[in-house]
Length: 226
Image (cartoon, rainbow, N blue to C red):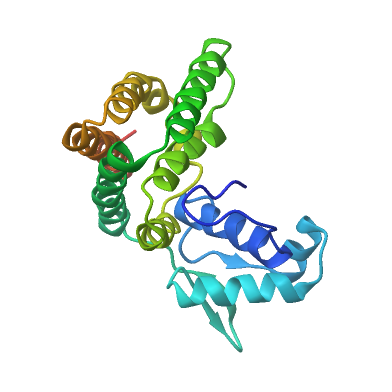
């Protein structure tokens, strides 16, 4: 899994499992109250129990699971409000990153951002998944901001964003292509405040998609609904 909000590099077995389990918890594939079986998960990833246990301990530190000596590993998950707050934080940080990228990005970095945007558009035309490219697009903007500290803050916030978001809500990806184009132009032309506004709006639109998703889930769970 590409981690556009952090630093590139070799991923250990523990990191690979941690990313996968975190994504399953954040996207609801592993529901609150569900148990994580160490042996079964180790078999799934073709590894020993040790990196799985270490990954679960990291999730415990984030408050996403509970590791207990007797009862094992239980999924805690996040509340709907916490998930929405995470996206709001990402909107604010991504806005600053886009603003600084418009000010500081080199010609090569601007060209790379434009190139990934073209790739996303081309892939969408044939109906393929663009989740990885989407994260790469935002990752390139974050790299171009020129601030290691801001990238670290973005990486921390992104840990609580499900990587499967784009797969769960493909319509948001399609709608977001035009927003990407506006954002690329703003960065290319050095329009700092416009780049910030567009980046914030892009993530805020994801919040609205999630709000509607949660509202629909509540309607489906309502008593008396057939």
